[in-house]
Image (cartoon, rainbow, N blue to C red; front, side, top):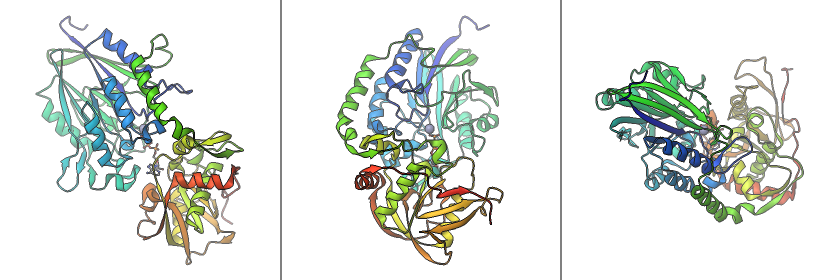
Length: 485
Ligand code: ATP
Ligand code: ZN
């Protein structure tokens, strides 16, 4: 039983909100509802802290139109106590993240984001908060995957050090100064990842709670792992608010519990009216630009994550065609992971285009050897039929994938403009600047000098649709599976 003298502290947490500002159709609650639930918890227990585990400031036009500032305004009003940047929070460049930090009324924490030249931390590694007399140490960790999951220029001059080592060093430092140690990590639990929160809590003794993000994992009641650490994670897209209750006595956590609130469990809670007003007024200021019509789609343009990262889609073809057209190139390759949403049949708006292509990528052309086009396609389909951000959407190219062959030898029957690819010939290839810089493992492109630059990808797609008037792209067998002849 919990002694009567124990102090009760509540940690409220979010992660991977990806700027889902308003209620959606898949359980997204939006900021106002989230804030309403937070209010009710704060009322029940004023000794509450509100923490975010990253990927908050990017992901919808609500954020991208103003480079994240709108989300910061909302989070300030919601009264966050700390924020740990995720990989997507670097999407506007880390210098912009430092500007957002200046606007935030709460600290940005991360122990393993380092300035390469002097190995200092870019952000504060930790804070100690005193809550009802209890000293709570809170430190941040950011996935080292950020180094290659955002455009290299966004993190130029930064390194991401080993989160396990940093966690150990901080726990050593905080254990005698605090009663509770909370890690907030944009780290995740994907088995494919080198660093996971599970690995960290197994290696490091002394983390009471690990609030996690990045893998978008839904942990209904947390997960006890490693050295009796409670790992908590609240899914994605404002679908959940995480609630961790702690009871602390004699400088130790004597009981801890995790749960999640969602739109159903919190059905009776009213949204916070001030946040609702704030979101509405920000949306209103963006309305005119987003509503601008750019053309019509006579079919649904398929940009679903599971489709564009595993196969040719009609939207993938349209985007690749637009890139090739803008650059006047022989061929275009663009990463499926860079296509972030679908567009419904009917009128296409500027807002929809920016939602599909939110990264502000530029189009570049490179004069490349045919052999490197082949190598690029091999890289793109190395996980096929499994999902991969680097899956290639192509224009001017057709090819086949032989799934029976090992990685690196699966691509065959490549044609360029209807003729077999000549590995020794030069081709003018158009792509986005993320891939040209070696993103999504397209390292064969990075040594080539840029032959030309052609403005932003979203503007090129708008121009291409305007040229077509009506977009009616099809899946035409540019990419198919088939045995090597
Ligand atoms: P999250 O934390 O949201 O889960 P994640 O690490 O799973 O992030 P994804 O949503 O899978 O990230 O997005 C990563 C993919 O996004 C990359 O593999 C790449 O295809 C694409 N991507 C990221 N940044 C860019 C960029 N600047 N330009 C183009 N594509 C990008
Ligand atoms: Zn995320």
